[in-house]
Image 1 (tube, rainbow, N blue to C red):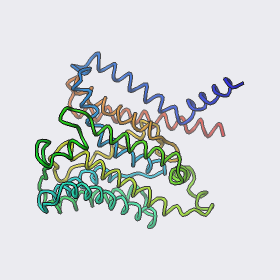
Image 2: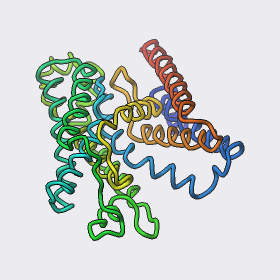
Image 3: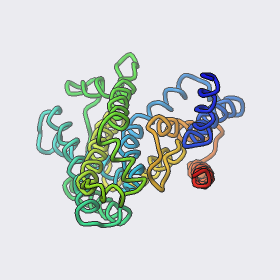
Image 4: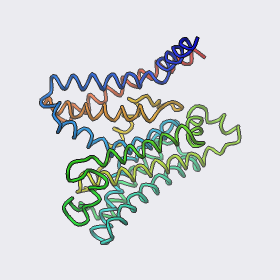
Length: 332
């Protein structure tokens, strides 16, 4: 009897929301083997390091994006906010000559403020998430460039006295991946918040049936403000990792990074319709995208083909989600 119950749970998981997570993990393994066979030096340690290095700041962005998408929303500003916050932090360091520790706090503060603005526009003013975050995408893109006077801002190198922040947030001089440690820590924190707290329960509930949540007496507007503000906080953390990774921050960039975050969510099984998703699946999605990008580079294909194939993968993932949703509705 116990075995039968366990088997039923496994089958329910596979047929339900867990289907895309299983497919995403299988796709990750297949892609890695495929590029290992047909790519040039794909199985080298340098390629593996490159995959993880580019996963850190994307990973922080998707932590917030997953929460937002589960509510049935979207955050198109996360990419420009991430880079824009890093740009303003660079202004604080290079122009205002503030200590690097204060500059890092400013990066997080900028992310939180833009996330709070998104929350107000969507939760309190009732703007559609697509329109509101599209607006803040352009606002952050322009505002941060104005503050920087359209100048590239540079952060200290790892050998400089203030280069300690690279050692703390990216990797040590010996190559130890500190970015992975920070991402793991905040992944666990976000996982607990999503699965064990009231915020997580309401996040799923709002995405599943917001009207029912409102009728039960819950102020969904306040929770939306909190969720989008949290997304801004994670964008600020992504900005720190981005600055530690690249050092030189160029104005008018970041537009497009949000698409990789959205793609990772969809590939990992988070439904754009809301109410369904997991952080674990999203992280698998991040790895799928970065394996695909690095694998295509190892085969000598230009960036245009990377974008093409990522788009194909996203369409397939959405199609699978539609099939899953139809089966779930029939079962009800």
